[in-house]
Image 1: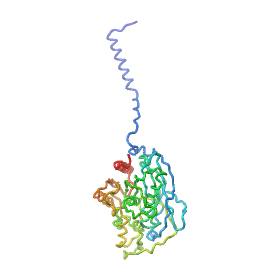
Image 2: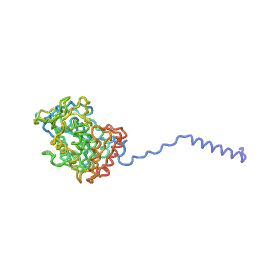
Image 3: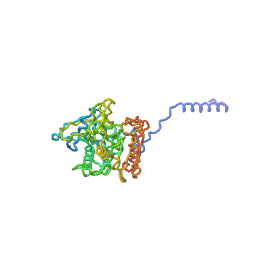
Image 4: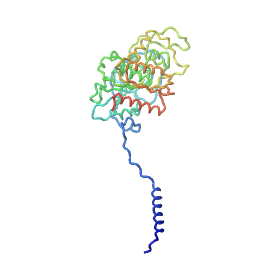
Length: 387
C-alpha cells in the first residue's frame, strides 16, 4: 500500500474536513421542536375558536305585555339588518310577547361564570345574533354566554327593556344548576343601546326588578361598548331620535314645522304583539331630510331620561366596569363615556377605558377590535372574574 508523504496527508485531511463542512452547511436546519401553547387560552386569539359550547336556542324566559308606544310607531321603520335570529311564533295570549334567550354552555365539571350578552340597535330594533363567533374569547376563558332578547321600543317604551334584562338574569339564577352556571359570577356585556342596558342591569336599583324577577344573580363586572350613559344629555346630541322613541313620552313634529310646545302622546293601551325582532349595534340614522324632529323636552321627559341613565346610579360598591368607545362617535357623544369613567373614578370603582382614536360608533378596524377584546379579558382576569 502506498503511503502518502506527510505534506500530502495534511492536504487530504484539510480537503475532507472542508468538504464535510460545506455539506453540513448546505443542509436545511432541523425544525425547532413545537412549543406548547403557554398562558391562558383567552389571551391567545389563535385559540378563541377552540372551545365548542353546547348551544340551546329560543328558550322562552318570560311572556310580557306588548305596550303601545306612539313615539316609536310614529317614527320611520328602522328596517331589518342581517345576522340575527329569525322570529319564532308567539305562544302567549293576544297582546303579549314571548321573550327568548340562547344558551351557549361551555363544557365543565364545575359551575362557570356567565356573560349576559345584550344586543344594540337604539332600543328600537335588534335581537340575538345568529352566530356565536364573537363569543369565542369568553368560551376560551371558560365562560358560558346567554344572549338575551328584550322588548324594543316598538314593543314597549322604557323601562321595559331594563326590566326584561333583569328577568333574563333572574332566569339565569333559577337555572344555574341545570346549565352549570355560577350565579355569583355574572358579567353584563353589550354595545350601543346594549351597552346602556348592560350598565343599567348592573347599576340600577332593585325597583327595576319586575314581579317574579326579584331574585337576582351577582354581577361582578360590566363590559360597556360605546353605550349612552346620560339620556338627558343624549336627547339633544347624536341619535336623539332613539332616545325619544324609547322613552315614549312625546311625538315627532310634522315635517317642516318649527319646534313648538311639547306634543304629549295618548295614553298607552295594550295591543297585539307586532314585535320586530331585528338587530344592529348602531341606532338607525335617517338622512337629514327624513329625520324626525322633536319638541323641546319637558321637565317630565328630562326627569324620565335621568331615571333611565346609568350616571344616576353610580355609587361605591358597583362592579368593575370596562369601557370602549371611539373618539369620533357621531351617534353617542364620546363625552358620555368620559363622564362615566370620571364618575367611576370618583366613586372608587375599578374601571378601564379603551379609546379608539378615529373610531366611530363601533365597526372598529380588526386590530382595534382585537386589542379591545384582549384589554377587557385582561380586565376580567385582573378583577378575579376569570383565572
